[in-house]
Length: 193
Image (cartoon, rainbow, N blue to C red; front, side, top):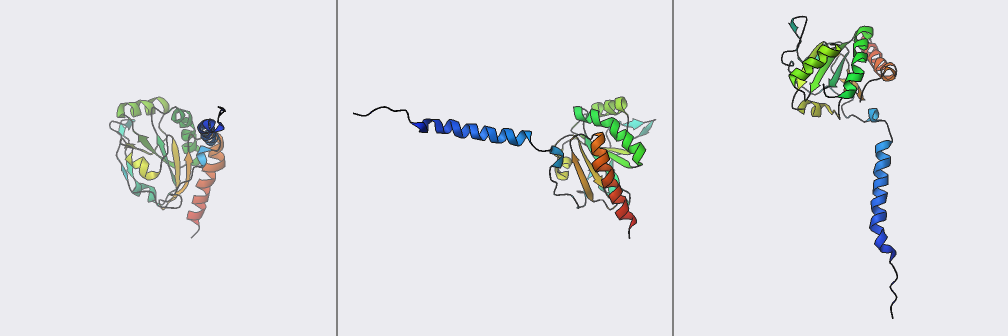
């Protein structure tokens, strides 16, 4: 006569599933997303032309787009990927304006997967810290730059090389502790023959 004892093996799939869920929960809640690695650090920016956002102007003059050649003109600069639909982009926008004023640095904006009307409204509402604003309506150029999501900010040296990448919205702390030192380091390297 056989006894019908419950087998512990029937709980094995549930235990495996619970372990996988726990692993992903820990992975998603730990770590700093701004420390995501970039294979482009130290390399020349990917070649691209960011066309002007249709109808974008300031004081009656059209705001131009830009190309990566503009980033290799001998001056340290910043490229910021943003979108009107991005809440964190709204939060960081005043900090970009302050950085432009205090740091005396050219900031280039890339409007990502946005309607031109929404982009114009965003700049009209929050101000324009950008020297030029290019459009990436398909998102293809962002992929080439290794952009994970909005917003992302790159510090570019005068030779057009990416020297620092910040994933996520800028904060006063990240500007003070990461962006400004990266700018100063690039300027120092540029001044040294």
